[in-house]
Image (cartoon, rainbow, N blue to C red; front, side, top):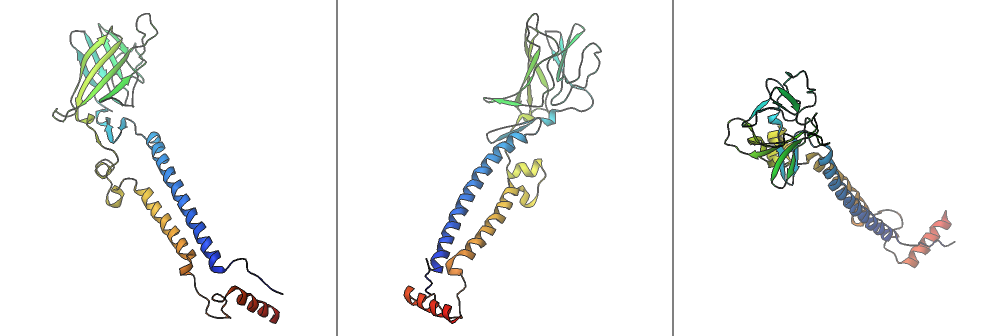
Length: 266
């Protein structure tokens, strides 16, 4: 009986090595694309209230949020309006029993009549080079229209003002839409997700200051495992047989004859 080999062990091992390397490249490609997608989803899903990211710029208006004491009070000079404003939280003013003030971010009163001028907002927006916050859907409609009273605040980066600065009234459109401007250091951007940001905002230290540290740590472990797998499959690192009849270095015909003899002996 003659036993023929379809391919040599070294050739089979080499093909396995090539296939494994191809598989690793595909896995790394998928991992890279998945990571890019996960960053996008993560940025969308984990955007913190009162913050917004625009390109590499990160804005955080939470220093303007008030949780006790008085709201930000603004006088509408020349209009008889007086405003209570809070950022990323309901206004603290509760002195108007005739107006529902829950979920109100901007409240205005004129001639002893008060009105919600927009619901509480926790979402700053960037339009062009302007950092804004919109307060929509106030309690009252604008005259006979279906539009409800609303307010817009434009934030301007200014590190020269005292404290967080103060909002000022700019104008109103038919006592329906109200516009404010606020010069404050809170409107100044920081670099998104950099080492300085992680250190100053999240109080990170050591290696955790590196952006996306968890991902790079897991990736290193993955690449290390893949490296050992590739090395184990590489023909040059395969252990050589030292005993037996030593078929590896024989021509194909002699190898088959010797294997036939060994088979018949058993």
